[in-house]
Amino acid sequence: MPSINEAIIELLHEIGATTAKPVSCFDIGVPLVAKGFTEMEVLNGLLRLQGEGLFDFVGGNRLRLVKALPDEQTA
Image (tube, rainbow, N blue to C red; front, side, top):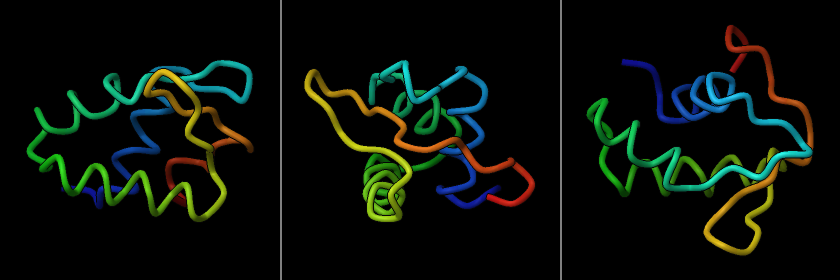
């Protein structure tokens, strides 16, 4: 199983996340929990990636990328 950070980045790629398109946290959490991650692991991964400056949380339980996603192989 990939790390939670890798799984989040992979999922963001799959759903076509861009800097212009906010993403619902629900659209991230539900599939990752279904893959076997806990809600706490997902939250910690999101907070870690936010701390690295990948995205910011915005209103409505969404996040918006502030820079392009890293390649999946280098995540």
